[in-house]
Amino acid sequence: MDNRLSKRDVFLGSARSRGAILFILVVAIISSCQAAPADYTGVFDGTAGRWVDLTHPFAESTIYWPTDTVGFQLEELAFGPTEGGWFYASYQLASAEHGGTHLDAPIHFADGGLTNDEIPLSGLIGPAAVVDVSSRIDPDYLISVEDLTTWEAANGEIQDGAILLIRTGWSDRWDDHTAYLGTNMTGEEAVAQLHFPGLSEKLAQWLVDERGIVALGIDTPSIDYGQSADFRAHVILYRENISGFENITNLDALPATGSFVVALPMKIEGGSGGPLRIVAFIPAEPGS
Image 1 (cartoon, one colour):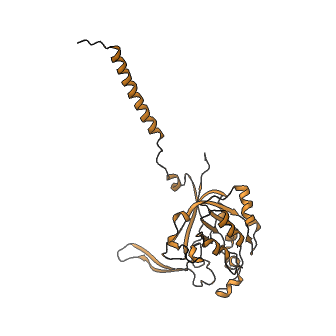
Image 2: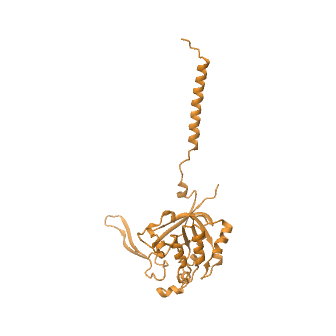
Image 3: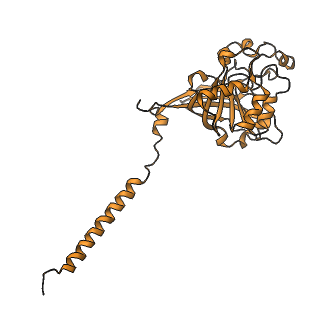
């Protein structure tokens, strides 16, 4: 047998080698182009940014709408060592839906609107636009379209799917019931005595017509101002299934843009609202 290789054999062998090398290169390139699995650990351990709590705690001192006179109740059922030798604590609670930091589900002011449990997560979680009007506030201030367009001129247009948070600075009064509500009265007669800032009717309609927000939060007792007799901001926004977050706090800790809101209420079937734990995540600056 002639063991010498012909030119054709050499060519075919070289071609096979080149083909094998090309195949290996293609596989390597494809592998390198595949996206790495998303890594969310930095969100949860704080290395990718920081979390800010926008929630007032619930307690006996929690402020409720003046017609909700019972307030927050926490009754001890058990507290201390058991006969078995372990420690055990348990309570039962009672609360109206619309007190403290809470959700207004659209059905609160809109017949046929979404109930608490029907609101999709996309209506509770999203990028924040934080508008600070605290420098212009008085107890009967109506937040205007101009307030929003002035903010947009500096920060860009509010994006679709955003959660709009309006800072009035009113949460600084939280520990003073009378200063926060404008009255120390309770019951139906107290409603006419309320004084705190809120949205104008024109702003509510502008947000519906011109922007695509999914929810609106404010650091006052209501998205309507205290002296409102017809709650037009509630009606206009909620009939479009835009939810409200009321009595929020710590908005001064958030940037105008760039933070991300997670607002998770107690999921109450058929509810018009409910206690809310709302937080915001502020991503770390690149390179920090």
